[in-house]
Image (tube, rainbow, N blue to C red; front, side, top):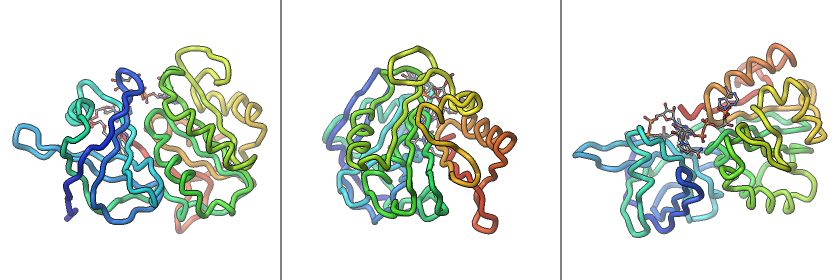
Length: 248
Ligand SMILES: Cc1cc2nc3c(=O)[nH]c(=O)nc-3n(C[C@H](O)[C@H](O)[C@H](O)COP(=O)(O)OP(=O)(O)OC[C@H]3O[C@@H](n4cnc5c(N)ncnc54)[C@H](O)[C@@H]3O)c2cc1C
Ligand SMILES: NC(=O)c1ccc[n+]([C@@H]2O[C@H](COP(=O)([O-])OP(=O)(O)OC[C@H]3O[C@@H](n4cnc5c(N)ncnc54)[C@H](OP(=O)(O)O)[C@@H]3O)[C@@H](O)[C@H]2O)c1
């Protein structure tokens, strides 16, 4: 049984009408970058809980989560109206296998995210441990609109910090803006635009691809990489080239 502890919201950042970040202070157990916690609230006498990836590095006690308000959802509209000082329940033990320990060595590590799923990569990159095994890292954030690229300033700061090892690329699907590719991730891999924009190739002999977020993006991209690049899912018992986490 998961152990729940009480936390306190210390900061709420509203990026757009729907996207926001919560910072929480809570006595949680240590976690591994890439893992998720569960947040819970009592709503009409019932505990409603959902999974949220840590954005902060494990050595940062300010626990940060990046969320989208799904208006018809059960929990996110309640989290969306939280204010500093509010109490929130959080599981003490983080969970999940979307962590670097599960990723084999390779030349280029691709980190592909849609929407709020940029979080686990930001935790991994802010922590900065166990990345010597990769010559190149590519962080790709795909969102509907440029205004949804909430963590672009942090992505840019990380790109500077990694001094050439990390390349960042944004993708927007519903408008055309300078600096971002336009379209969806699988199409931009298929037509070569993503690799040409980044200046690196995505092939089974040089790359590992992490995928996180919209489950249809994850499935479509995996299918494409399997059919056109002969890339396979990575399992402990059968090493491959793709590691994924679905958000719903
Ligand atoms: C391992 C894991 C980690 C997760 N981490 C995050 C996170 O860091 N941030 C976050 O916002 N959500 C995250 N989620 C999703 C989160 O758990 C909730 O599903 C989400 O907050 C919506 O909750 P809800 O009760 O309001 O609606 P729900 O009834 O749970 O979901 C309703 C619908 O909303 C859509 N939806 C759910 N989550 C998202 C999302 N993140 N982006 C776009 N559409 C979505 C889907 O269509 C889903 O069917 C994660 C899920 C998993 C499994
Ligand atoms: N983002 C906002 O500002 C906003 C505003 C109001 C409400 N919401 C709520 O938030 C939820 C959506 O959040 P979101 O925009 O962060 O997530 P999302 O719908 O998963 O979209 C994020 C990105 O993933 C892309 N995508 C979707 N399916 C894909 C596929 N099969 N292959 C490749 N890429 C794919 C989208 O492209 P497409 O554009 O082509 O789908 C978009 O670029 C909805 O439930 C909505 O109610 C969001």
